[in-house]
Length: 212
Image 1: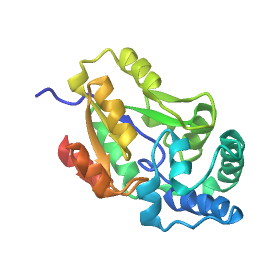
Image 2 (image 1 turned 90 degrees about the vertical axis):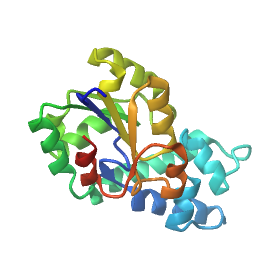
Image 3 (image 1 turned 90 degrees about the horizontal axis):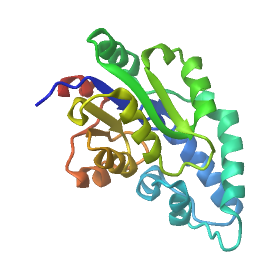
């Protein structure tokens, strides 16, 4: 087994704890439409990427309104409130540990690239990352193409790379790239859902150090 030389991090729900905010913004939209509100457990069961499917799981009918409009309304609210959130506890320690041990790190996210670069600078963790990959729009669809770009740029064997995420999509991307993966259970999907994928699932981000 080769030693891990590069960690690909997901952002939302893995490094950045925006779960409660996303739940509250989703419930605001549901309430405006007279649809049932979600508990945290329900939200984690409904959530998936591409994010359009999550909205449909929650009860939105995009034959009656535009997904793009709903997505824009949600994102406008998110951008005004995102700094009320914080990094998950222990993230700085883990990032520092990897850096000090010569393990390179990058971010691979379905968040928009411009906003992603701004927020990692705001939280003063931008210096940890070799590369930052985000989408060129706000609609949180697949990031697989970005993963392929990042994989090519690392110039490492796939078994020297670990992808850390919190969703089924993160697992799927890791499988498509051929890299190892670990999933974090405190993000946007339930632990029960993540355990189905037959990869390690951690409850505390600091536990990641033990796997390396």
